[in-house]
Image (cartoon, rainbow, N blue to C red; front, side):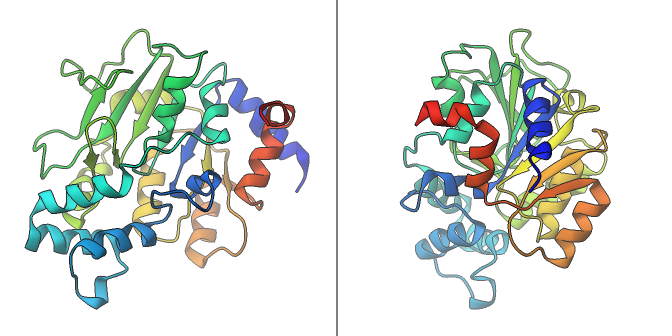
Length: 289
């Protein structure tokens, strides 16, 4: 892998021109003993360990969550999700690195853990200059697409789609929700049907996110695009951004992944995530060690 691509990515991150988009796979950097699920398959295993579901949907996260919601109530799904992600996991070197970037207008985190906000809260460079906006389920918060939170986890009820706190140099956007601060999760079929009905016209995506992505590049880390849902969310969140993006994905790609990368102008970086992070951070990682 040519080093000029990583140098280009590093320069874009430090200039605030690249938007990191973190998926579940980033948790591999937390080590093999990480107590929270690092893949949709691992997560659905946690959910189905708490409630029986038909075998044909046992490995389908959204369908299994919907079955549990239908027959055991939504509270059962929320409780199982809270148990799955309720362990305190320290941020990885990647999270810490991103939190200390001199300019980070927008950070997208498309999984349910709270490592990004932990890193932002712990960073000496950040203080209170960031805010969170998270997707919420219509089943639990009908009429609301997102909730806004301050750095201390307090709900900002006054926020609307046009606003962003004037002091927020960084906006953390978690489209699927998060364990913290309020255990909001989009996980069942019905959760996503509601969002997908409106996402093409961008209604569920906060106006602040839509503005911050304009003409910027996306850097996908720990993401796969093998399912239609993953591709739809990525495509809609990166809409009207630049025509130059990157995705760190090692190994074989599926046909759908390859087509998606080509269609969206995403250059693949064929490296294991840990190796990419080591090269990206360079001397900073050595100092941290």
